[in-house]
Length: 110
Length: 115
Image 1 (tube, each protein chain N blue to C red):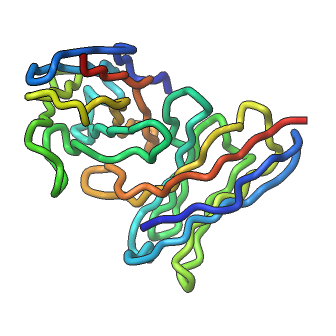
Image 2 (cartoon, chains in turn cyan, yellow):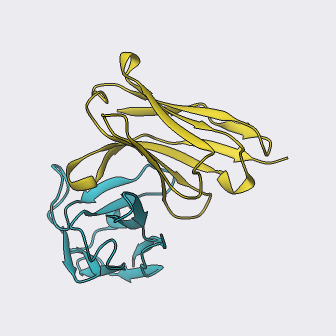
């Protein structure tokens, strides 16, 4: 199972919005709504920010939103804040009963 | 929370067992997974164990790693055999949530395979 494709880095100024894309195949993102996104600060464990394409766990800011079209999922961060600077990973369940991650996107707040 | 333990420096070909102790949550009726993250690289799913006992593994560890659980002490394990340099990573455990998502995660345990 090949990794999902994410941009290596994206950046934005405080208050702006940015979107991270995550492209898979018809065996993962294109087949299932079981797409989740994780935020990881340096040296820390990943934290779930989006599941089921667009749902937020309790406690996660509504500045985080998700969507999907075909084989591509997206995470949008609105009203960018300094604390949003982190690595972000998309993840999808697959037809092999496994999970596949994207390579990760480093978000920089300018 | 979940707390991993058992990491360390191992020689190629060696064996090691990681533990993931759960507190404040029960793994008895949950599905649980192990993940890993090589230094400076991205996340990789390693293995899942369902409450009924069915397990699945990533191709990179199939036949070498084995996942298990002890319901009596609320702990998940990962037995790693035939360790290779490319198994060097921080290993995380996580509890399965809604729609095949993972939360919470443990803090991770570093496994280094080197001669």
